[in-house]
Each structure stands twice: as structure tokens, then as C-alpha cells.
Image (cartoon, rainbow, N blue to C red):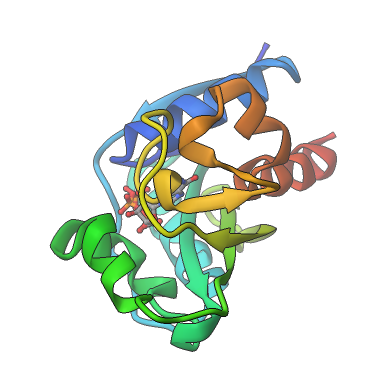
Length: 181
Ligand code: ITT
């Protein structure tokens, strides 16, 4: 069985990637050591830099996942700052920013970075289009899941298995898997 080391401190991301790739015969192991996140407007260079840095540091092939929620009415905010905003503001205050806003469109994006020591990193992007809900709904998933609505249900209202069929992460991991094959 092929094994991939996933460098992430986010247990929600790890659980999802583990389930998605297990279905494809790949075992995912977690490394929580982290990597420096450079400041960029796009997630791709952040994931590429992180994967390259971690693969040199650990002297092993690694994958990372840099993700973010891009809210259209907020000109793409929080985007690359999603972790900071989730930690400092949380879902309730993010919803407050959206008060009185009728354009609820949002894009969830995940960029998988993969790198082998001494090589350049490859990146694989997955996105899913949805809406920002008017209130938090559901206790499943993690992070922004209770406020991200996809076809009438928030990701927080879905079982992991359902979310993993349609999520940004699933779409990015599908591309990564195809490339590995
Ligand atoms: P790493 O250690 O992997 O960097 P992180 O939590 O800092 O973990 P990011 O920098 O990629 O991750 O920040 C993304 C933010 O978006 C973070 O707050 C996540 O919890 C949140 N997020 C990412 N994917 C999500 C998903 O599928 N559902 C809900 N929230 C998600």
C-alpha cells in the first residue's frame, strides 16, 4: 500500500484526506510539525512553498493542504487568511460581516501541495461553489462547515462521507491521485 505523509496540524483535514485516499488504496500518515506559511493572495504558492520546505526538512515526500473560504461579497475575504479569521473571529463574527448582504456566494478552495526532496513541488487545486448560510447549521465537519451551504445543506449538516463526495478537498485529492497514478 502506498503511504503519503500529510503535514498538517488540522485534524479535520487529516481525517477527510485519510478517508478519501483510503478509498483509493493510499494510507495517509499525519505529521503535525507544520511549515512556514508565506503571505500570498493565492493558495497555490503557499502550498508549493510549504510542501517544498517540509520535504527538505523531513527528507521525505510530503503533501500539504492549504485551503480557504472566498466570500464574493467580501471581495474574496478571508481567502488566504481563513485560518487566522476562524481562530480570531469564528463563524458568528464572519456571519456578522455578511449581515444585510444578499449576495451569499462563496468558493471553498483546497490546494494540495506535493513534493519529494530535491524536486520542485506540484500543486492540485479543487474548488466547490456554495452560499454563506444566514446562521450556523449542523455540528459535523470542522471550521467553516456550519456556515457553508452546498445545494441546500451546510457541510456541517452532512455526514463526512457525503461532504467527501463533493468537497473542494475531494476534488483536489482526485487530481493528486490521478497524477500519482
Ligand atoms: P494546516 O496545519 O494544514 O496549515 P490550518 O487549519 O492552519 O492547518 P489553513 O492554513 O489551510 O489550515 O487554513 C484554512 C482555514 O480554513 C482553517 O481555519 C480551516 O479550519 C478552514 N477550512 C479548511 N478546509 C475546511 C473545510 O473543508 N471545512 C471547513 N473549514 C475548512
